[in-house]
Image (cartoon, rainbow, N blue to C red; front, side, top):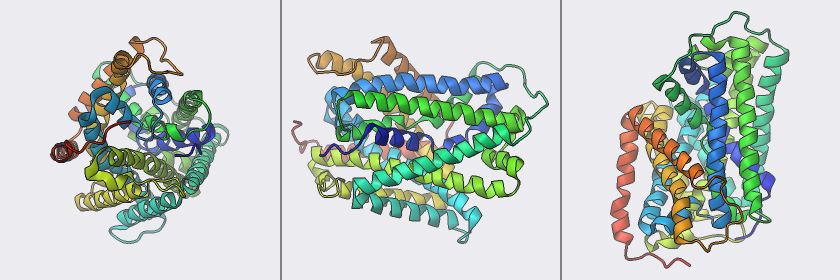
Length: 435
């Protein structure tokens, strides 16, 4: 496997995944539960701080064990092949593919506002996006990362247009709309939506083996990525309340649409639609790149999925893993079309399993310190063991909340995840010896 990615490439990948569609959907939910402008903005700063803590934990794992399997590799070393098998199964059937399908529905919903293709227009656009981006990444990592960099730059330019327009070309919302400060589970609910919007920075672990230079490059990539994302989120949310006021933000169903209409009129609707479509494409492409790496790792460890472990040196991509991932994502788009609640269903489908393995991966820092004390660690998480234990506690809280606040989609995701135990039993005698 060649080291073809620079720190800039990895930062673009992190920003491309995290600054996806959440920032266009969740702020209204956060505002409705925050209660005041100060609390609303504080939640976004706290979200960046929590993500920063998590990035410190992942930086130790990524620099000590650079591997295209990312979290899969850490779980294997810490817990053994059974847990890592279930994780790879979850990534292939629930976490990554569900996220890709979720993003494709957002792409389809907004593209359909520009030009509708009929009653199933969102699904058609979404499926087309999956196919095109998967083919680009099968052609080669160079094509995939170039596409990612262009989409990320375009996305950031679009967000800056919203920020600049809100600061310099709109009148501030003059009436004070702050409500009494709210505490307890309401503030906690606001943080659930914030952390959902920050989710995805951990995907950098999957391309750690392809990063040029020393292991410190991954540390710089993660921390710079979180800093850029936090700055973008605080700025864009400040613009939301600056233009609309906290109450209107809390009631808005299409926050960027409402902001841009107020700034530049009806042309703002088209601009915001294009912006969100580009953002969804960028997040889809980044998720496709990193998700296929786990499928590849699964194929190299278990003979039952050996066909996934083929790495094409000429293109620098796991082509078979990309094809399987694309096919499952396509199937989930079809499933979402049948339920007619594609985006919501996919959010519910992925959340509980995602936070379960986030917790196990963070806990593996402590386990690997005990099991492999001699391992070279170019970066050591500050404040050990308090820092990883703090992030573990956050993961447990999010896991419990994701089950409490979701419905049938979460149960479906859990059921699909549990079917992996059947395949694990079939393959338990065919584990390839880990090198």
